[in-house]
Amino acid sequence: MDGIERFADVVVRAGVNVQPGQGVVLNTDTAHLEVARAVVEAAYRAGAAWVEPIWSDGPMTRSAVDHAGLEQLRASRPWVLQRTREWAEQGAAWIALTGDADPHVMDGADPVKAAARRAEEANARRDAVLGKLRWTVIGAPNPGWATQVFGEPDVERLWAAVGTAMRLDLDDPVGAWQRRSAELAERGAALDALELTEVRYHGEGTDLTVGLIPGCHWTGGGMVDDAGLAYMPNIPTEEVFTSPDRRRADGTLRVTKPLALQGRLVEGLRLTFAGGRIVEATAERGQDIIEAQLATDEGARYLGEVSLVDRDSRVARAGIVFHNTLYDENAGCHVAWGQSFPFAVPGGVAMTAAQRAELGLNTSGVHTDVVVGGEGITVTGTGPKGTVDLIRDDAWVL
Image (cartoon, rainbow, N blue to C red; front, side, top):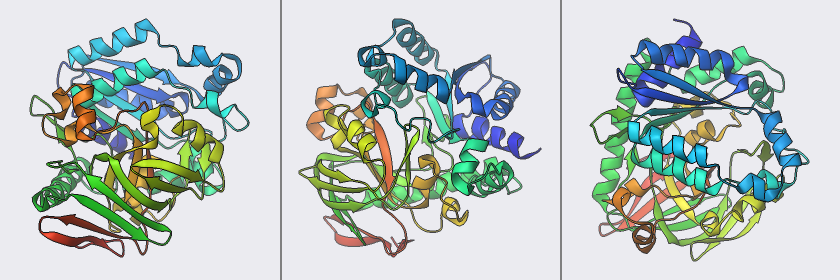
């Protein structure tokens, strides 16, 4: 089995855990054609009843941004809403392949239009993947992504780095991910036992304290759906995470990895929080696209996730900056502004939006992870048992 076939096998078996007779939705870019074909083949080998590819393309998206009006870019389409709801009712598996084929495709575009979202469609997808579907999001190598990382379209070199991060270099990558998932779940259980009320990230340029919701649950590795089937929403994953109280975040944060966002790169990003809200955002590059996304809706300026990652992660071992958030976030501790995870609190999935808001969960049409971890980062947690070190100098110590 070659690298692409091993990749596809991990996506299908460890990622969404496709079952015989199940439908599969595959969101992918035209740049991922070869990988997409391998994923479709693996899904059918696993017994999928059908696989429906949903294609995207950077230049086509740029055409829409350049020529369609803002209202058109934000307007939801009834047929998209209907098919999303039907996929959820059928219990389809949802796979998304990412990896910017051209990170500069939106250079020079109107940042407000580039950040536009079809909110009702985004909410329908969010409700489906957070409530009824087994899903996974995985970055797939392509020449454009390789050029962003190495300055040249060296896809073979990128596959080698992805192979390290995704454990494709091991004899049984699927089994390796199942074991790693169990290890991360143990870390989550240890954090739950502390009953933490807040976490503090501290390092060069960062001193941020974030309050937690009482009884919140830390998730690590994979998840289990209502039928008891395990799946992994992200591969690679090296994190344990929860959703904080959106009203309680104060301090400063220095983002330590470049952020690929809407076809552009953001570098040197610094954020200031007060009362849970991002009150200032500055960046050496890409500040306009950050400001546009933070203006998407009211929840975009509040946190939806806090996460812990130590320096022993496979992504960190790959030794490169992937310029892909799904990979780079797993090289170090990170936080995300925007949408919370309802499953982070007991009964949260079944709650109304008002009930979630009352608890402190955030609602937004965006969810953007930014890395704050790396050499020198320390994370402490405070609860009824006092303040304890969770990560010290980027090493897991709990």
